Image (cartoon, rainbow over all chains, first blue to last red; front, side, top):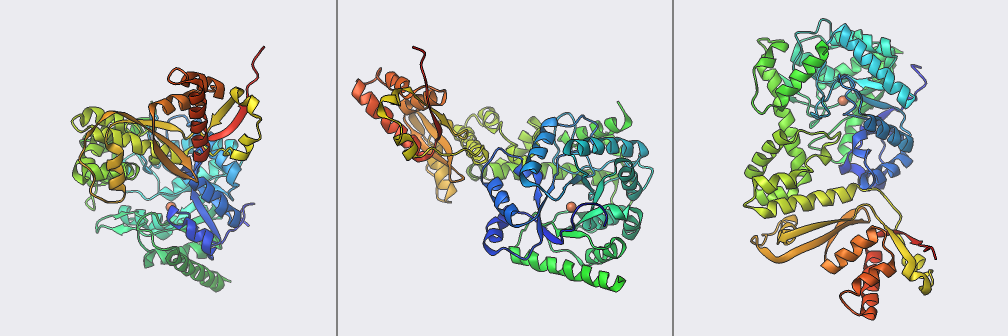
Length: 278
Length: 264
Ligand SMILES: [Fe+2]
């Protein structure tokens, strides 16, 4: 047992397109990941669907606008609304991305990379502690896909992640597709990434598809997961053990059944790897 | 300013500037695989594409009205004029009406349509409140009616149009040929609210607009009647107010009724 959080099994990202199918067919999905900001609203239909789906399934909250790496003070309204949603939904855990999304009160609506330095790691860790204190729980940070890297960086991404985890005592959401995308874009060894992170802190795994433009890959979440990412997932499971895993699909969204079938690949692969290791 | 703060300020300035400036490139590792310029471009382009897509989602019939080319041009200019301060892109674009009033002044239907579509989305996300039923209201003895004050659902809003914007919107919504833009003889007021989780709208007379605005501000049924008496006799005023109230109730606008105790 890595920590006191539950192992949820195999889940899917909760998407508007699937609300009715989920409620009508009660698919064989162990849990759903809800995008926090989509439900940090006064009221209305999306929250109503979330409440009803929550009644049938465990849910985790996944944010995109915490901006943990920003050099600006936290948006207190954001934190307050995040906590309010958590009180309502009672998620198994809360995650966001290891990135920054804007300063000067503005939002770029993108997961912008951070320079991998000790100074930045310390800065991020301090902020993670503030958020964890405020929410009264450990949070999960997700590694992002990146397309550019800074001259300022003086360590690998996995060393950077390790430093933050150690200083903030937070957990990890390992996005295996993002590792693949970034390793392709920046030409590093994807397995070295998995070897280099504190594996006992990985509480959740993301899988997704992407677009390969030849010289670089864009993390689009609009296609099925490709074989090299499945292979990397198997490697991650062999190193980390059983981890709650889910598929993110944000564009070109197919019928729910198609994703439930894709999730079966993850179930089978994980089971095979764990059996082989036993 | 720390090194990280400066880096973020420079990166953001690069992203917000419509022209891809070259000065920030030296902060990025250049390589012969992709190159720093192209790598930064990915972020620059993605920022605009993502926001244009969000505006298209928020203003579907405005986009249909203007066509893809003009809509995308306006969206790009809008991004520069109004960088997002929202944590969720679904709220981005709330100044579109004001923006179109000046940039597309020759096409006033556009600003009115932006106003209308924005009001529909706000109503969709508004706070959930209970709906007062006819039975609850009927339980109140008639002698108390004069002193009744009502609380309304927070989704309520009026959109005022001078053009045939709403008929155009309705046609575009069902992918039919819209009527030609035409100015109406007077301003029209459209009441927006939410019922059964969906945004609703209806044309409302100016007299009802005044009555409803009074009621939302806390005026009692008696005060609403008294105000209508400026236009008609007492009996007619009472009947008109009762008719309005029945409509508000049917639309599910009222969430609570209170008996106001006047100091005697
Ligand atoms: Fe992810």
